[in-house]
Length: 383
Ligand code: GLY
Image 1 (cartoon, rainbow, N blue to C red):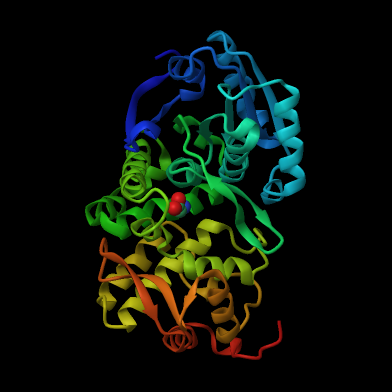
Image 2 (image 1 turned 120 degrees about the vertical axis):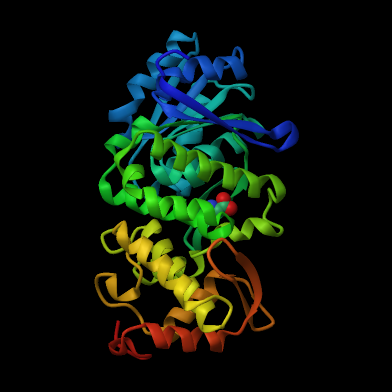
């Protein structure tokens, strides 16, 4: 494969006619043109990216497309979550139409989760649906958001409330792109890697406990962790594409995590998504132990691993003041569907034994939060 050093691993997302390959390896951006031309012969392309990622990777991607005879236009948005908004969506849609791209042409997302979600949504709505290719450049995007077809933007009423399922035709995870990631962002993405072990792959979790340093340093261990994560996600997506059931398992740690993100005003200086997921996974295990579903030793093991890699595992580690437990429960109830007074949570019977619990009593959650949040953060504390 042109421009690729070392081995490339392929993970297939089995979705019948909408199935696709995830390729994982060093230097894949340089091979993008050949891979896309092989799957979408004759297609032209729009590369949607952000200014930061464009500076690092857009020239290599554009050159690779050109070498494969793919005519491409690059559309760069400002970095950050604000790109997932109606005004930016309108700008990008207009730019794709101005480039006279058609239904058989490709929208290529080059970047992290924000760019992937925005570009995927654009590809789903322009001309009633164009082809879509993901070239994720963050660890979080490579192991989670680029796989499975969730796309969309935020509304003033909440995150990811406007969007659609739009599966890509191809995902190219160039592991060399991770070399330019800030350490904090890589670590935050690692929370999603560990999540797959905790959901249903206990052997993978044990492997991560033994090999996380090598995963952080790069090389074959890192590629293996990404491929294993993609295999785990692909398996869940293949059995429940539209989240009617099992796909909700992928939200392990996200109920507490989303509430913490909302409670910190989505201020990335205080908490980024993966850090919220890390605290959320630690809390989900501790909560499961409190409910006598899992052993406290396993909850401690989860915390020990996340803490070893430098991720936060308790609310006390989040800088700045947090609302008290009652307000946190409100955030949780806003995030989740509350069915006849019960909350749906992803709980666990131990490492690799997560399950969907649809009948969690809000009073149990409140008592748990009161037991794990700092005494200074009592209900009614001024925020
Ligand atoms: N990130 C959760 C999902 O794709 O379902």
